[in-house]
Length: 233
Image (cartoon, rainbow, N blue to C red; front, side):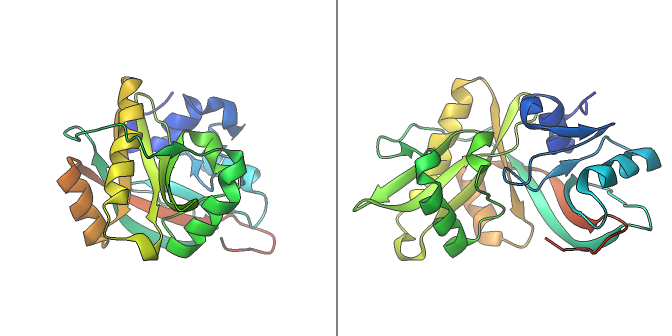
């Protein structure tokens, strides 16, 4: 069953709940397809059998990205990075639909990938838009800012891929898109939330100014399964 607090183990709650149709599962381990998202999930307090099932999903030497707290892989897994982050919940967020925000679809993916490459907001793959709704702002026909929905734990939706082209920063586009994406989430009677790197003080300041409150620390851990020729992600 999903965690009693969906936000404590968001990928697990999403993959066993609203995103179950996207999930690849083995035992109690789950993951998104690689071209959708790199996130994997384990239940709370995973057993050795759960880690073995996760290794079965990744394949020998495969990479897994996990989000949570107190994640300790077995000794035969190799940790490649551990990023300290924070989780913020939009319980006081003033959301608002934006008339200039356009919904992005599969035909926009090449532009979205180019914007992500220029701004590096976090993982975004060829089919990431399958996770939810993505909005963008165009100027002179060019996509200059976007934001969308990623993990979908029960009763909540994560806002992610918030990015603005370097040439168009300082116009408040990111804030507008966060509010617009949050408005769609609130229309479904769900709560918006997001994650930020713990040292990204500018982003955290922006999100708090918009009405997000910091709820908990969140660790993002990358690890390579035992066996095979490891290819770090």
